[in-house]
Length: 138
Image (cartoon, rainbow, N blue to C red; front, side, top):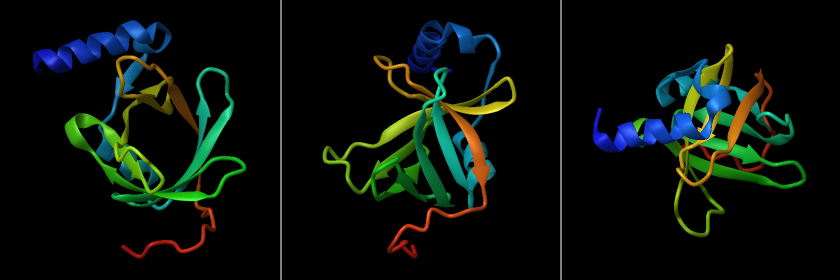
């Protein structure tokens, strides 16, 4: 483990004391294997508020929809053990990245940023699609 990764892990543990003791890091690839071809509902942890729904079309493509908004397609990458999404509407051109883990048997993601500690929980995984228009083929 590099010093940078050790600092990142230490910051993660310090920022999430409730989750740190029982969490098990999983690779972004393992997360994608669990959700590929499925639609996932993400809820804010611990409040339970619905954040949005994402359909994982392939290991490199998803479509995201927040309540009351349209569909946004995202390119998925997995640099440095993170799960990253670059959505079509990202004006800054920077991906949103997450660390993936399990907590008490639940699939979770934590924003991969040292100055933000947002955590989301997967509450539902279904075979139902989002029925978004113009689903990209590639």
